[in-house]
Figure 1: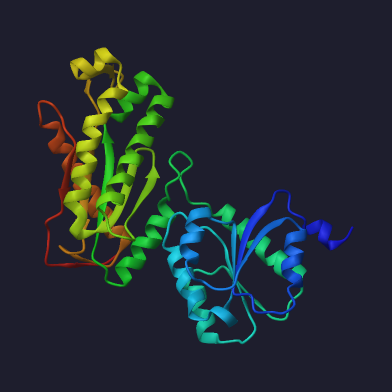
Figure 2: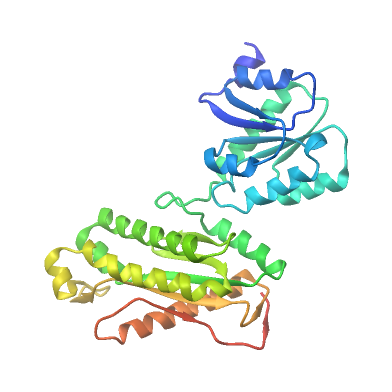
Length: 329
């Protein structure tokens, strides 16, 4: 059996090759022959917009031609949850140690030094794809990035001293809803919350702000601190307006359901609300993702306690007002 047959893909993969400078493009022909749907671009103009529009499986960049553009595009793609797991492979002939290190730090998965055999490039691309599939971080229910991405991106922002707010969102009385109506309807509520969070960040956030799904009904928004009120007000008001319609009519009209608590006792549970606890680097100097998460979780519990104090519970957000200390993990 020929090596080409062994490397042939079981399913087609899309690949964009940018700035390829070699007169001999045998390796691109080889990639096409083994199953890659390959598009070639001569320059990086509007490349980011094109990638976001179609999100290929692999990006191949020629650093000899692109130079710093290769580093810049890698940075932007790895900062976007939609393209975070897309492998970026860089081919290079004119070795520049500093630029290679910068590209790797920006998130490029691999370097291939010219000259190389087409089979070697194919093997390294496939290995990167397989590695990134194993490291998939998106939540299967919502498609939002999970804990790995949230921690990595928050840590990056803390390290560069960015002004950020961590907004920890959690549903109140979700278990009772799940127990009565079943997991399918519960999953639909999770999707609704994910949509509302994305809408809030999309409409009132700043480029780079994002929503992450830790798991279950726990979500995190990482946003610019100046956007807290607009984003969180939209989320809480939208959730309260939409969520009653997820209940049966009789439950919606009376404002509660009857279900068992964790001790097996029947009791009334109000309609679901969302509580958001917020900690911001504008209030405190925080260098640790874990500390930031801990404070945001504390504020979430505080918001929950306030929600329960209303005759008719409503969704709330609360910002940690502690200040003056520098917190490190």
